[in-house]
Length: 306
Image (tube, rainbow, N blue to C red):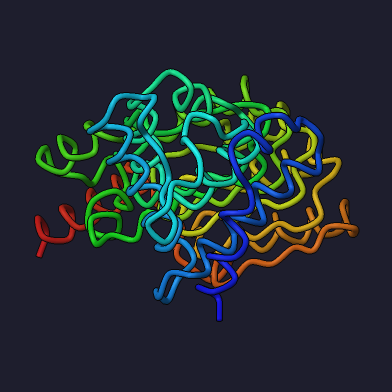
């Protein structure tokens, strides 16, 4: 049924007709036609369907001259890829992941401009700090939702250990990535003033100042979720009170240096915020090296006089 709709719809949208229309109605036709085309693929996820269509167009654009790079539907040419307007190309790019978007943008200047369009990048998701080094995304004022989640055993075994307890090998591992998230958040502060939601999970090296800087720069922020960020303390909650004027929801889960007193103070001063902290106030906080010195000396004395 969908394939028949696709065959009936797309041939009727000829290149002369579409190129001669610049109204919002023509854009709607573009989007509708390619949405039907996307649904016509027998895959389980719309994302994969979009990738299939774009990759096919990419291969045609890469292997043929630009004036011969056409999208084919049911064996018949429908339109040239380069003749699609910006709104339709943005819609097609939205089905791709970051790497696929960058690969497609390398085929011609027009697609590169689409890749660099800030409207394409309203959501960014990173699964490790190393991905922040890549050039497959664009930061801009259109960014609304940012998530950096690092679910790795390295976080528990290396990054979450107090600095003064780390071995030289562990310090060497951390030195390769410890400043990545903080540097990236500094760029977000300068380039993404319209950020609405920020999620940081497993970011063991971010500090209270990183969070406070985001709160000061991104005044429209509504949702803040911090999970397993061991350097976050009650100072971040104080920043929420002082600078999070539009915040509606704050989560500080498994942040061991958050105290019950800090949570209570934040809740009392900002009752309008939905505040939750799973296990944070119940965890053992970091200890300082100077706290261990008296105990060590006491044990030495006991052993010396026993």
